[in-house]
Amino acid sequence: MTQLPRITIITPSFNQADYLEQTILSVLGQGYPNLEYIIIDGGSTDGSVDIIRKFEDRLAYWVSEKDRGQAHAINKGLRRATGDIIAYLNSDDYYLEDSLARVAEHFSRHPDVDLVYGRCRTVDQRGTKLGEHFGSITRYEEVLDLWDVWWNRRNFVQPEVFWTKRIMDEIGLLREDLFWVMDYEYWLRILRTQCAVGVVDCELASSRFQPKQKSRFPERTADELLRVVRPYIFAADRSVGWLKRVELRGKWLFSTRFQEEVALSRLRNENRARRWLRLARLSLQHPEMIAARRFRERLLNSLSCWKSGSPAL
Image (cartoon, rainbow, N blue to C red; front, side, top):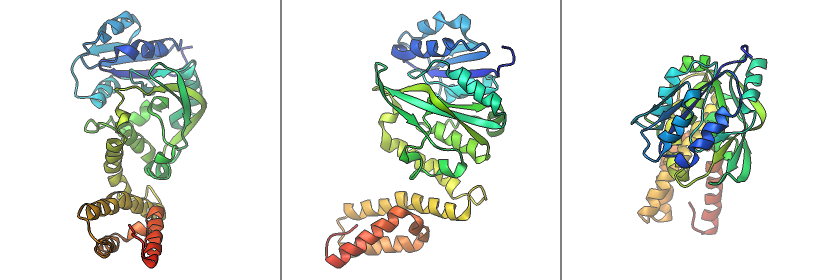
């Protein structure tokens, strides 16, 4: 028992009393003998503190005080973490039976691995199963590709992901200036180290869809993802092959610059010729866009429409 890797779980919480006890029980009920469980509450006023106190003798640490948001709360826990394996579990999600044992076994059998993910069950507000998600990312260039990987249902779902303390010591803490995608940016930094990624082919956790969930705002999430990924895509390093980097730059430019110009042209009610001129100028400024499949499809469609006299772009 004493040879099992130590696992640190951090739960950030704020006014989630409706779900918090299930979250706590899903961690403590694992029966994992080398567990360090930390709860960072942001000063809840809905009875959450009373729930936490029920379990305080089984917690390594807990606090309830005002913080600067979710990332700040998680970082407060990460600074206290002593586990070989680390994860955070939001206060409306929960682990499934034997999750920690399965994760510990995988890390023990594969000591070179620094990040592990599994399957994630999706549930509704009451915990009824809606479906199951199983990502497919093991390389840095894959996590960079929002378009054909991340947004193509190959993404990680946060509660299914675990990483090592050694990789945390190398890359640091979460970015506290991010509100929607601090987890994605963290995984970007982890995979940028070219570390080994492991996969546990079973359900590890449940992600709950509920009215207060931040992911209810996909447009804001997408905007922050595009801002976060830009410096990684346009970096002048060899972490990604040249052809792949050109392709990623093309996708990013099409999703941002090109789409913005199209929207602006429509807002100004420009005629077709003027819109073509605007977009042609942009394409000449950013020739990498030709590497984006959606840009090529849009271009071919527009040429076809132009020949037939139909509206285009």
